[in-house]
Amino acid sequence: MEADLLLCYVLGTTRLSLHLEPDRSLTEGQYRTLTAFVERRSVREPLAYILGECEFYGMSFHVDQRVLIPRPETETLVEKAVEVARALAVRQGHPPVIADVGTGSGCIAIALAVQCPESRVFAADVSMDALEVAGVNCRKHGVEARVEIVHGDLLQALPCAVDIMVANLPYIQRGEISHLAPEVSRFEPFLALDGGDSGLEHVSRLLAQSASWLRPRGTMLLEVGCGQAPGVMSLAAESLPGCHVSSCLDLGGIERVVVVEPLAPFCQVTENNDRASRPA
Ligand SMILES: C[S@@+](CC[C@H](N)C(=O)[O-])C[C@H]1O[C@@H](n2cnc3c(N)ncnc32)[C@H](O)[C@@H]1O
View 1 (cartoon, rainbow, N blue to C red):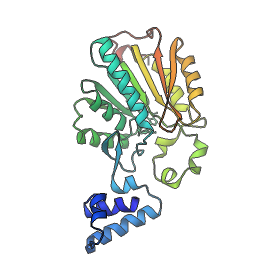
View 2 (view 1 turned 120 degrees about the vertical axis):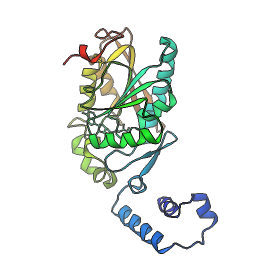
View 3 (view 1 turned 30 degrees about the horizontal axis):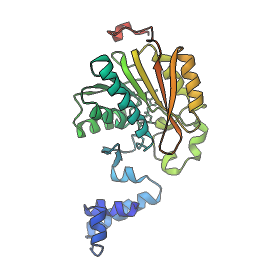
View 4 (view 1 turned 180 degrees about the horizontal axis):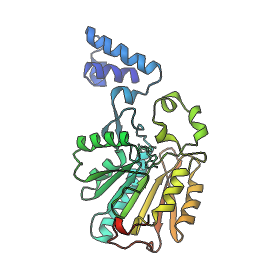
C-alpha cells in the first residue's frame, strides 16, 4: 500500500486510477523522484514525512519531522472532546473556550475548531518548530482566526482559563524510546515522545496546574498510553479532589482517554478569570 501511495504521489493520481491503468510509464523525472522516495522509506523514514501529509479525523494535515505524526487512536480524544464541547455549549448557553496542550501539528485543536465552529481554541506547545507546522495547518483548514497559537511550557502561555482542556502530551517512558520502531525513535521528535522516566512527567505536572486554569464546570481530557489510565486516574483524583474521573476506550479496546470533570466547580477560578489573576 505504501508503494502504491508513493507512486500515486509521483504520478499525481489516485490508487483507483493506478490500478485501473497499471501499464503507464514514468517520465525520467518521476522515476528519479520515486527512487529518492523509496530510498528514504528504505531507511525507515515514515511515509507521512515523505509525502508531507497525514490524514486525521477525515482531514489532511501537513506533517514533517518537526511534529509527531497524528495517530488514529487520538481520534478517540477528539470524538469525546466534541461530545463534551457540544454538551457544555448547550448547558452554559455559549460556546466553550478550549485549550489543546502539546498541540504538535495542531491536529486536535483544528479538528475541534472545525467540529465546534463557534469555539475559541488555544493551541499550545513548548516547541516553536511544532507551532510553525500548526500554523500551516490552521491556514490550510481556514481556522487561523479562531485557533490561537501560543508558545510555552504546558499552560504557561494561556491568556485565560478555559472550559475544556485536551492534551496528548508525550507519555512514553524515556528508557523505552530507543526500543521503539525506527520510524518512531529515529524520525519523530524526541520532545514529542519523551514522558520522562515514569512516562507521566508532563501529565502529572499538567494535572497539578490544571485546577487553576479550568473554569467551573470545565472538563479535562487526557490521552494516555496503554496501561497508564489507572495511574493517571489516581493522579487526577489526588490533584483535583472532588472531581469525577472516568476513561474511554479506543477502537482497539485500550483505555485511551482519561476524562476529569468536576462534581462541584473547581474553586480557584471565577468565570472572568484572566491571566493576571493566575498563580505565578
Ligand atoms: C505526543 S505529541 C502530540 C502532538 C499532537 N497533539 C498529536 O496528538 O498528534 C506531544 C506534543 O507535546 C509537546 N510538548 C512536550 N513537552 C511540552 C511541554 N512541557 N509543554 C507544552 N508542550 C509540550 C511536544 O512538542 C509535542 O508537540
